[in-house]
Every structure is written in structure tokens, then in C-alpha cells.
Length: 390
Ligand code: LMR
Image (cartoon, rainbow, N blue to C red; front, side, top):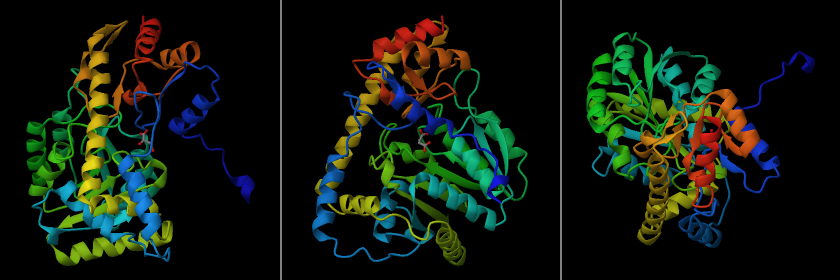
């Protein structure tokens, strides 16, 4: 039986981690998978998380099952941060999910059970989005996310929404677009909220990088704007980046609607999908987030750590954009892009050459994780880019 199985391609981004680890060069630069790095190139555990973990160690008296919805204290503690302090709580309910991936999977599966047949999505996008849509068995309809000028392409979204059919959903990145760093502006979000509402498509909002762009409140602008207008929506949320909990897999799936029965049914469907997939989400990281958000001092510490990350990324972006023109690459737009990622307009041969010749690891799409750049390696990176993109 098992001999019927076909070879599968390795996930390119995850394969890059292994390639980088196996490279013996001491001055190699990892701009691959999206993890934050300090100016020393480290990805330390947040101090707020360490403190919460200590508290957890001292106070947790059981590891008995919680249920497929996970830690509801965690799920509810996030609501004011994601949806805003004044959001009508009767319109939103959620459940914990294993990371942003688990949350997107729940959103797409629940959408399918609700009758969604096609997902409209701007491309390029996070490669796992398309994989999840395919795994769930929905059709993906793509449109362009970025204009030739490098801004977010509102017209392409408009055209896609104008051609939408009953049974369509649209998947939107809330902030810090992965992989381009090109976000919709506030004015564009204002239009998007009205356009999505008029089109009747179900919005699925993926917020995986809140706080890594302009700030926790600022990065929720688009999501909140859309939710203020549409009758219903699904939200996939990740704490993997903004709490630095990557391997602990901390996410949440929310449904938003003023129809109480539909809201309860969205959760009931999410729970049955979870039960048949992972049964219950891993507890540890979500419990740590709940402890942070229920303690004013720990919340302040966490927000200060997030500010520090954002400041460092702003410094990297400033340095990159100050290089202006590196070979054929115009670096100026990197200064206004948001979050961990930007995409360089270089081809596969150049991406391979910068890896082989200079030890610079980046995704095959040309995406770089800007947090991989530090005072110690940024000049080397710019020189290497200039060499391969001459
Ligand atoms: C990334 O895009 O690098 C991250 O979201 C990690 C992942 O799971 O792909």
C-alpha cells in the first residue's frame, strides 16, 4: 500500500532553515523564515513570557484536558487588542488554534462548511495560504496584490470583488503583508470595507503580525474598519510573532456576526474540526499569553518589548532604503514597507548566487526577513546584493 505514495516536495521555506544550519560559514546571513532577531542575531524568549512561564510553573495545578476550544481565558483576553476595547462582545466568539496556521485552517474549513466554494486572494501571498485552501478543497482565485509602482493594488481587489460570485470569500492580510511588506493604506481600507460589504463576499482576515508594523492599535485599523461594516467575518490570529512563541503554536480563530445562532454554530463547527484534527490545541504558550494580558505590569513589559522590536526593524528599513539603488534593485520602497518582510526583485539565479557566493539565505520568491539584518551584517548584505544584482 505505502508504495503507492508519491514523493512530496519539501516545504521550500522550512528546507531553507536546514540549508542555513548546515552552512559552515561563520558570516552567513539568515533572511529566510519569519522569526524576529535582535541586533545580536538572537531570537530570545520575551522577558514577559519568561515571567509568565515562571508564574505558570508556580500556579498551574493540573494539565487535565481543556477541550477543543482551548484556553478561553486566552481567547477572550485578546479580544480588546484585536477588535478594539469598544467592540460589541456579543458579536464575536473564538477558540484557540495551534498557531496562525491552525487558525487559518479553521477559518477556511468553517467557511467551506458554511457554503464557501472559492477564496479570492491577492498574490503573492504566504505560500501556506494556497496550500491550506487546496488541502481544504476550495478553489483559489487570485488577483495582484502590488502595483507596478509598488503600492497595494486596490484596483485589482476591486475588480476581483466586482466579479465575485455567491459562495466567495476573500482572504485579506490585516497588516505586515507576507511576503511583500506592502500594506493597504488607511484610505484604501476605508474603501475596502465598503467594497467587501457591497460585494457580499465573506471576509477572512488574517492578522499574524499585529504590533510589528506601526503598533498594536495601528495594525488593527484595517481589520476593525472591515468588521465595523460587514455583517459577518472570520478572523485568523497568531501570537507566534508578537509574543515570540513560534514553536509553542499560539493562535486563535474568531467568528464575527450579530446572528447569535450563526455565531454558536461557527464555534460548534470549529470545535468538531479541531477535535478531528488535533483534538485540543497545545496549552502552554496560550496560558502564558493569558497570564501576561491579565497582569498590568506584564502587559506593559510585553508592549515595551514589542516597541523595541519595531524600533529595531525601523532602523533596518531606514538603512536599507538609504542604500537607494543597489545594482538593479531600488531599495527606497523598503523604507515604507511594514513588518518582517520585503520582496527583492531578483531572479532565481541571483537568489542562488547570493546564497552560494555570499552565504545569504532568502526565500525563493526574493522575500527577505529584514530582522535577520544587524549592524554587523547589513553592509555585507548590501554589498552581496550589489554583486549578484549588478
Ligand atoms: C513565514 O512566513 O516565514 C512564517 O509565517 C513561518 C511559516 O510558518 O511559514
